[in-house]
Image (tube, rainbow, N blue to C red; front, side, top):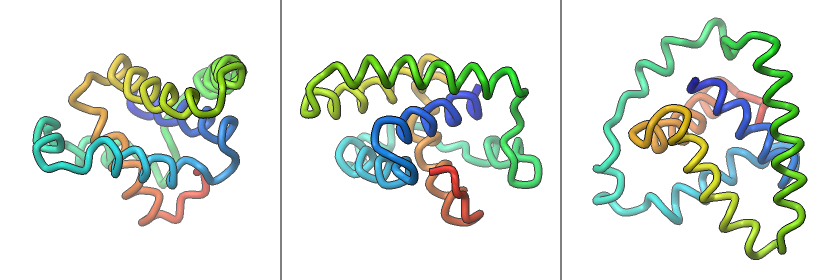
Length: 128
């Protein structure tokens, strides 16, 4: 589920904000909503589990999951484009947190964002 939501959010953010937008967007989300130690301490850290699931820098997903994620990202992004830009930015942040929490639990929200940033930086990830 972790990699499914990660792929979906990558695709969604790329459709909404352009190729390469995922990392800067998550950095902004982390700095605006998770900057205080008190907030970060609410989320247990467990990035080891996420790292061990990777297979030679590839995200272990079936092809149908990739196709479903592409379709879902297209549909959801079209809905977001119907909203004014100012409201859209706030709603996208809320949506990312809610979609992640629904897929992997609220405890995984912070780790998913941190894991994406760490793996992208250390592996020269080009997905976002």
